[in-house]
Image 1 (cartoon, rainbow, N blue to C red):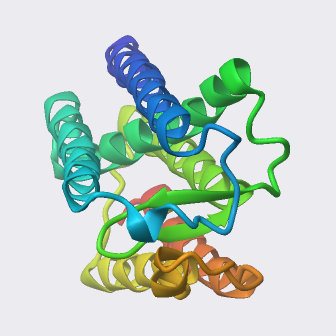
Image 2 (cartoon, rainbow, N blue to C red):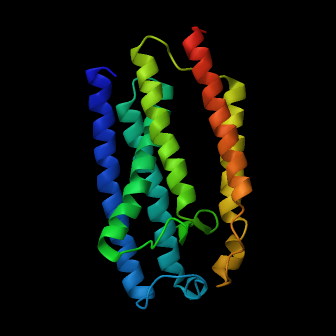
Length: 219
């Protein structure tokens, strides 16, 4: 990558690292308040949590996404770069969030540990390895897109590619949220639907490789 691309990439990563620490700090405070004996499933407290706290937490998560979008817009030179810089910031944030939690709390015990990932529009739950793998894909994809751009091989997505992105994203979200209502009521989530997650990842990766092939062929 050229110096300018490396510069922008590094600063987006630095933002993701700092955001990961802030996210971890908030979660540590919440766990000390609501799970003083340790965070684990089933989440009996969640269904009885104050509605204001839940609303604030949902708002915080929404604003976190807005922050990442803003960073992507500022870092990218064109729309596709902005999109991938958003994904990169998201990926670094998510990975470093778990790194900081492990450094401070010794949690998660392993990549198979279940976590409450998100609140909007329903609770997202799944093993830690699933969001981490997605995040690593986002970071790697951003590096490849920037490299292609700097080599004069612009990376473009067709309408079919965007449809595939939306479909893959929805499939992965369903794998996390299918048991959302049960988790909200304090029930133990069912075994993770890894095959649904894998389907979404295959669609996402296939779209990306298809676009990469077109970029290398010059059309």
